[in-house]
Image 1 (tube, one colour):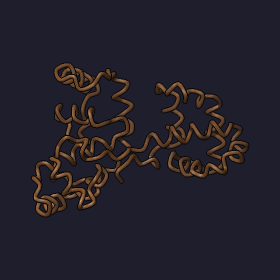
Image 2 (tube, helix red, strand yellow):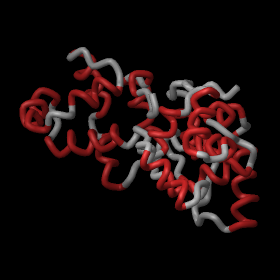
Image 3 (cartoon, helix red, strand yellow):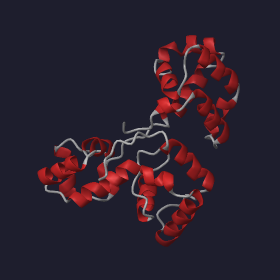
Image 4 (spheres, rainbow, N blue to C red):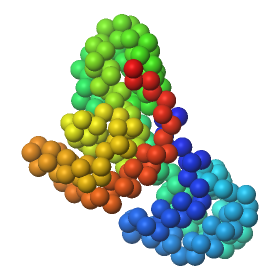
Length: 224
């Protein structure tokens, strides 16, 4: 699975996430009556974030569902946005700054437009070798793009952050989990100060937030 596996986030952990992270101002009211809501969801058989996301897909049922859960329809709308934000969004391959325009066109002709497309087509060494031979694109480039694609699966990691992580020697989601959080912050600050990639300042709390979601990713890629 390309994105965060929401089945691995229990309702209790979901409540913890909402209660401990810095929510967007427009979402802070989700904390109102949150414990009561979680208990009512459990009574309905909702046990993880994936089930909650599925429940919230049918917006036509919001008035009825809001009444059952003792919240407003607006609350459910914002709750759905919060859940959906945990899913990793595919990034266009052009944003990776790996392939030339000609190579991007070749990739597109093969249906490879995004990081999700590349991830799903390059899971094994033989897959990547075949892709390189068919498209006459360097296998090293394909591997580099796949490493960035794997990092971009992590909730909270965008193209700039992924590039910085690569320069730190963190080549995939698994290696991100292994690095010490303080070391990750210091590496980010050092590279960003030298190259000015981003105006965002990261803290250990930010790293720990990202690691939480990194743990929910499936490990599908065979790197060797």
